[in-house]
Image 1 (cartoon, one colour):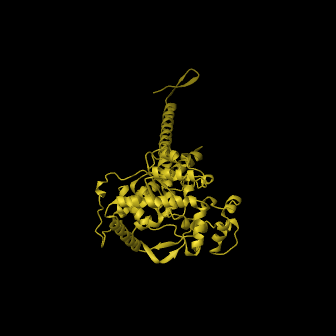
Image 2 (cartoon, one colour):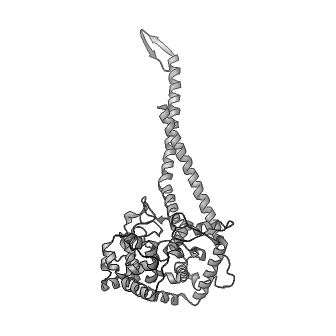
Image 3 (tube, helix red, strand yellow):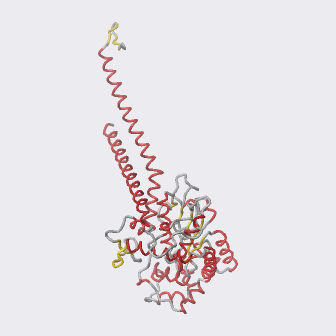
Length: 430
């Protein structure tokens, strides 16, 4: 029993030490991010738009936000920017239970979220999830909804090559001919082959936004879905106007410039790109007609939002591009590239040896941020309370041990002071 007790106490002690170290690590990490973050915003060298028109009207920055992360649209860069914002502002990031995605095929359910009685009290959701307004509103109360879409021709070409669909289908042609071979009979391949990321080979963007493939040929349902998105989303960004989209987001959500500055993530290697001819583009538009309608609608409303922005829009975009250029020059060694260990399909710039600390946060990918914030959430909600319980247990064990030792000493004293009454030996208390 003594050995078992010592083992338990030792294990509890190790757990306490580990939790204290993790808490110290988190405090130091966040402290560095907060201090370095102030240096991310240099004064503009040529632009005079540091103060945007009517930005002073914003008094409450948005801290509740759901980002529908569509596939191959530049969404990884947006998701990382939002996750960094959640980290710096101390917001709870809603994360999947096991991986860094909720689900790429099933519609989102609140049961997919890692939660310890925090449902409805999260701040930001950025991981891949198919749009389901009712279930998502259960995770974050009264959030803003945003997403990003891309020209369907470029989006399908990107998804087809990135996910190596030709290889999984078994199309045995080289280079640019792989996509051409698929588009000769796309419905045949879609209906008869179960290949990796199949859902992204036919109207993948509107599928991510909640429309099932069985409804993609129903024009009434397609139009209804587009109208629903228009009514329920606060901002639909456009990949081809990436910086312009973030400038709109900044003003609409009352954020600062450093909140939206970014370093691109998930940019494909040039060897994984297909040449798009006008004939091939026409085939893609015909095959992905629902995504074409989606893109055309929000490409039009996007410019309506810009018109409402005010006269300083172009100046603000120019300032933002200058800011991004300065951050890139401070952080990245543009003459050196490497492939990240977790994905060899994308280019990854190396940091300069003397890069500021905030550069490490900006270059972190979505997966790293999600996993880190998930770990810290579990630490605060599970490991920290467990540590407190362990401390109480250790205190009780030590108290019991002291109590038993004290009783033993008292009993020995009582044995020395005894009185014989007849033939019976009795202990007489003092």
